[in-house]
Length: 284
Ligand code: AMP
Image 1 (spheres, helix red, strand yellow):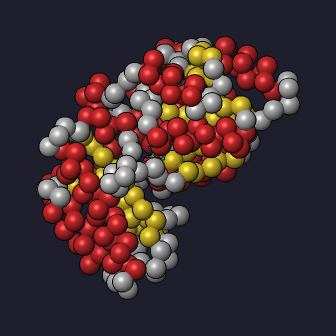
Image 2 (image 1 turned 60 degrees about the vertical axis):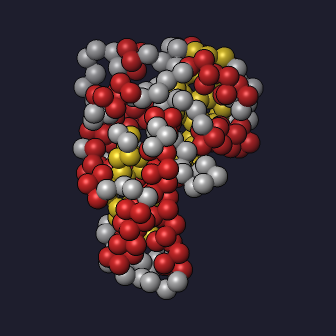
């Protein structure tokens, strides 16, 4: 594995591989790797052989300067994990490399970016993600890019953007990787202290409680969301710390009054000062 920091070096490494006729898989990340990231990398390796991973904590998608500041970083550790996962090129650009002064262009996906994370984090969040991912796609020019279901709305937005802008690549979405107790893996989990870690289980417990209630025959969204709020509460997550708990159409992200088709149940909450998200697609 090589680590490169400039767009020119990245392009040269990919071009050298392209000359051999090989495919290119790409996994964009913000680093502090966990088993979720490593699963995406291994999948890219299986599907494409040659694998490029970007590690860039993208400032334009953070609506909260303290959240950006507190985002965990450890490039040396990440490089070791990526190498062990079979990654060929680790792209670690600086902020100046990705955003030289004078840029005036951004990418915005309408509609599906408005609810859930869009409402909680503001319109600039997904604009920041769409813009940086478009730039990374143009830099790497992969055959397949890999994203996690953990960020369901982001993955949906990227799929839409790739279709709408005729970007010449396939998008593969990989199921959420969880800790044995159900907590969705996240780089932010390292910031959970001993008191917050058990409470963080509230998110996945709420989702699984809703899934069970649907399996038991309940279809009424309002009643099902109350089941979820009760589970969050019994894990010690106060109502004021829940940013949203919603059941929406898995394609349009519009509210559904009843769960009659595959439905995305998504939750965001603050636990011990850490913002966590999780989701589950629930089908009757
Ligand atoms: P991040 O570094 O958090 O921006 O995540 C990079 C990629 O890894 C995104 O496509 C995420 O959706 C994906 N990802 C993050 N956590 C998980 C997880 N627990 N399971 C599967 N994919 C994940």
